[in-house]
Image (cartoon, rainbow, N blue to C red; front, side, top):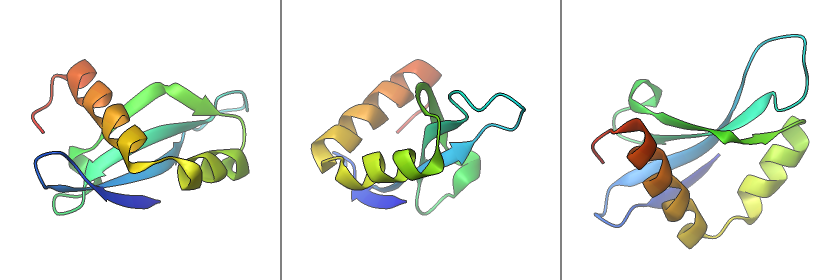
Length: 83
């Protein structure tokens, strides 16, 4: 889990969620939510997926804040959600 500031100054959390099921391929996916509103207002990027929690966490740890903001813009645009 990583916290970062979006372009408008709001604080967001980048996290990894797990999709349940028997297939391990792409089980873990990228999920972002506003820190003050919680996960219920979050947006998922289901095309950013990993096969293991270890790989997902490592990727999230190494992402720059610029990359996190870019991914959030993409997720918001796809979901049609207000930032």
